[in-house]
Amino acid sequence: MGKTIENKKITAAENILKKSAKIDGVIIEGYDFNKGVDYEKIIDSFSKTGFQASNLSQAIDIVNEMIKVNSKIYLGYTSNMVSSGLREIIRYLVEHKKVDVCVTSGGGFEEDIIKCLADTVLGDFRLPGKELREKAINRIGNLLVPNNNYIQFEEFSMPILEELYAEQKKTGKVFTPYEIIWKFGEKINNKKSICYWAWKNKLPIYCPAILDGSFGDMVYFFKYKHEDFKVDIAEETKQLNESTTGLKKSGVLILGAGIVKHSILNAHLYRNGADYAVYINNAQEFDGSDAGALPEEAVSWGKLTPESKRIKVYGDASILFPILVAKTFAKEK
Image (spheres, one colour):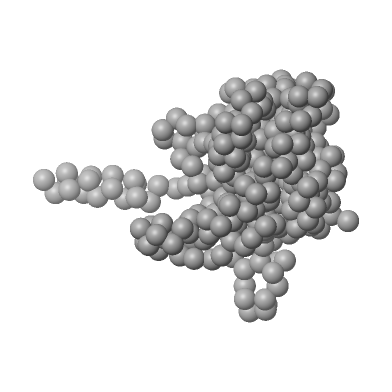
């Protein structure tokens, strides 16, 4: 009996105190505030912090390499990014041609124009929907958008739709979503606008779901008057897909997920994959959605090359993206 107990003790000790294999790698060490507050060095310390801080550090390195090797850079962003203060950061990138192609959702286009007409205001995530509805105030997370903003957007949109329709009737030209966005950018004539700079720089903002939002409502109303008005989404898809072929280097930077993420990655099938990829979103992969799919899944489809440098950063883009831009595009001379 005593021998059995002794053997169990020895076995337990061997299991618990089993000697480790040698590990080579980065030693985890956070920033030392005894050295004062140095924001550059705080962000640099993320590489040795672990968890999503280290993923963000890898994302910064990947974007810097995208820039260094002169990749064609595809920026994808969902509408909530433009509703938030990230709009000004995206506008900076488009204004200064830091990216080459944008892909967004319907709201990513219209929210930019609407903000030129009226303000979005900070609210709270817990404001009662019933009370807001009675006051005709729409909530986007903790942002508030008065319904009057959309009324102004309708008043601004209808004359432009009339102009596009007149051109369609005269020449047979059916405008693509990015051409419609350029027209709105030209008409808004506001340097705070992403669409304005896209038009000015002839940088395409592809929008495969341009009718999924307030602009779609405008087109719906417009078609009661002009039933033969059309938008050429097929031509836009062709142009987006063909934009990836023959590229020496290609990089994708995607904020959020859904149709924006898939459209950019699917276009890279025609190149057999992008060379660099950074995702920033909170979507999970357990349900098999493309939204939550990790970069490794994109490799299996040929959307990213097997040799691509790739990372997904989990977290809130409203926090992470300004940090990433500060350490990449904004540092470039």
